[in-house]
Length: 106
Image (cartoon, rainbow, N blue to C red; front, side, top):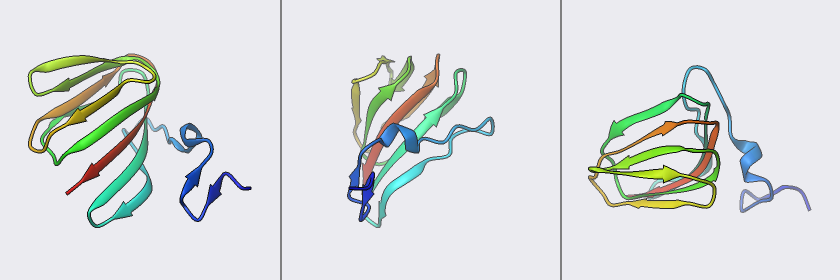
């Protein structure tokens, strides 16, 4: 079986992360009108500025850093999952190289 079958099965999701000095380069696993799933890589020191958005889930595969949701700050660690309600600001700072899965709906 290949590592990607009909864009349904991803054997090594972390390997799909793209790192760039220019900032994040999200790689979509699915990009449907009402649902998106993606893998994102951040280099140490990079950030995603606080911004509002729709409901979203972030699951961290690699790295350490901080994620702010509303007025709270949480540690980014492998295995941590953060769920953000619609309209709440969220942002991220990578202390080390970070890889995460994200999903968002409408």
